[in-house]
Length: 252
Image (cartoon, rainbow, N blue to C red; front, side):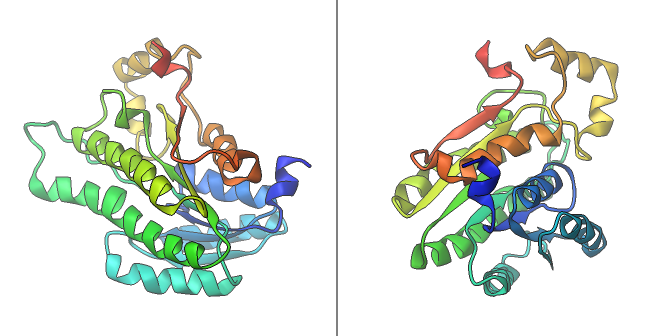
């Protein structure tokens, strides 16, 4: 059985679905046969994504939600769960970055990053995980970052938030075993809307290429295969792992 056949008919929820890595994951899961709930702040972007998913022969439910507002999360998850009578796969791809140096970052900027990257992601995971535990189990994959384990030039608040997600993944994997598997994918530098301007500067681009043995910046599609693997039954003996997709950065 192929990986696509293993995922065919599964029900997935993806946060941060409207752009970058999250968008690529939505389309990658749809291509593998999943029906997908897309969560994002932009209703217009979700509407555009809906037509692309449906063009692949799968169903798509757009849910406009700001993860920085945790009081709305459980209601949104309840709607997503009722849509196809369950969720088999949760992918936490929502994230923000505020590029402020350690001596300049303000409490408001720090809280902005942690509100989405950590707090919102946790409470979305909690709401879905509670239902998965009461049902037939499931698989959760969170997008962390190389910067959560290795010091990079990313903003300190971003690095700290991703480190928190890695530990959250390990703790939940232990707490929710054996019924719900919880893993993470840690991309290296991947070109998205969040960092395209930063990567356009020659010094930054050289920094990334000089530290990446595969000598290129990643793309959102580079992350999709790892997510689909961890979400599938092929990874049935994997939980609590943080799979680095970093072009080899972390080997040196």
